[in-house]
Amino acid sequence: MKRDLSGGGFVHLGKDGVIRAISGSYEVVDARRLTSEQIKDILDIMPPTVVRKEDFHGVDGAKVAGHDALFHPAPGILPERPTEEEATERRKLVHQAQA
Image (tube, rainbow, N blue to C red; front, side, top):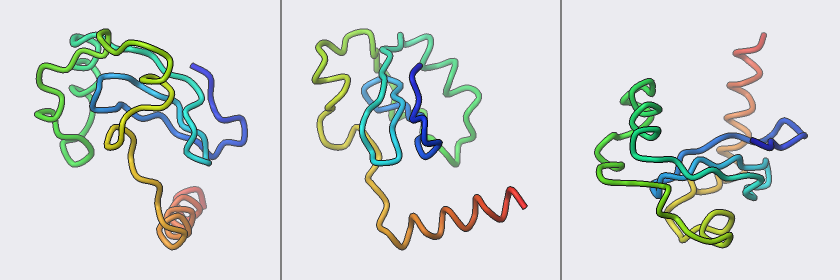
């Protein structure tokens, strides 16, 4: 997958079953449709504190059609952009973890 070259982005599995590379400015850089089996494989390695498996019951990203659905998904699919205060706190935590 393409990534945000600035290093400020992240990868997110949307509730529509599409895994997306998101830039630091919260734009979709790349997207891949996942089958139900691929989604299950990802959820099996994710801690339950990070993701709720029941949110993905019956989801099949292979059914997501069109460029707009992949790169400009409906509200609620992507995580909300953090406030400036939240972003500052996250940067502090990352910096502390790297020290």
